[in-house]
Length: 145
Image (cartoon, rainbow, N blue to C red; front, side, top):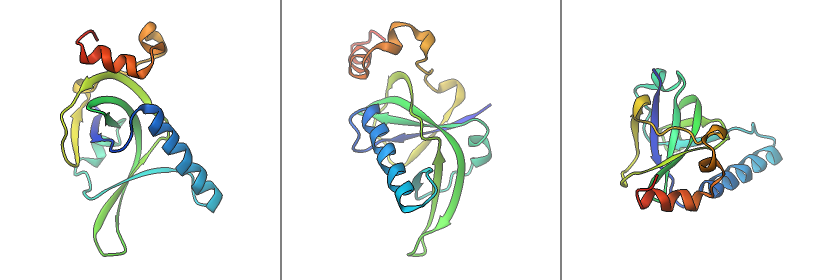
């Protein structure tokens, strides 16, 4: 069974903000001749990396709600230029919207068991998949989703 990470997305107002940020960073990397992969840097290395890489994702909390996920493809521990141990979480650069769920602020990241993770909003979800993110967020806040 897959294990996931849950992390706050600081500075983004929406899934679209995140997608634009990813697109910009990947374009910059391509322009510099670097590998076009998306990496998120953390201070700590997940101790359960093997479980995370067995189909796990990084779930993003945007504006107080779990809103989207990205598939984890690799976890790379490294030491930065100041000698501090850090970790790159290598992610598939595709944001997958999930059914929004409230989440209180926290520092760092948290593990999220597969059965606790919100379900993806997929094409089979009917009107929910076509709804603007802001409307889904409001409906969730009102308890209607």
